[in-house]
View 1 (cartoon, one colour):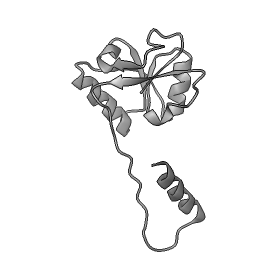
View 2 (cartoon, rainbow, N blue to C red; view 1 turned 180 degrees about the horizontal axis):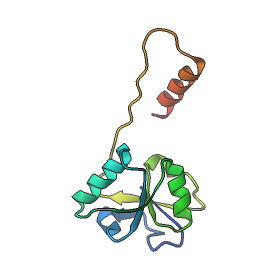
View 3 (tube, helix red, strand yellow; view 1 turned 180 degrees about the vertical axis):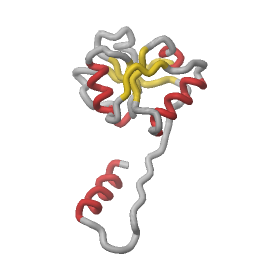
Length: 126
């Protein structure tokens, strides 16, 4: 999804084509992350090289930057409910940007309470 400040020209829209972001300053996760690779390949498929003005390792930081009007943040759809009063979330309309999250753990042997809790939460959310 695209996150923008309420004052942004895209605010109020429910969908935006990725190609419409050609001239915009984008904010994304750093190179080497799965989401960044998906964004870059999506932009290339839409016919342009993205201009990434800001990078942050935490998608919530990208939302914070968007609230300040520093650019267009491309973040996972799972953050759609974060900061609804400060940032507007807009669906990206093609090409589809999708990725996978994988979590692996030992099926046998001892497991710490923290690991058990992480796995339980991941199963509930994912």
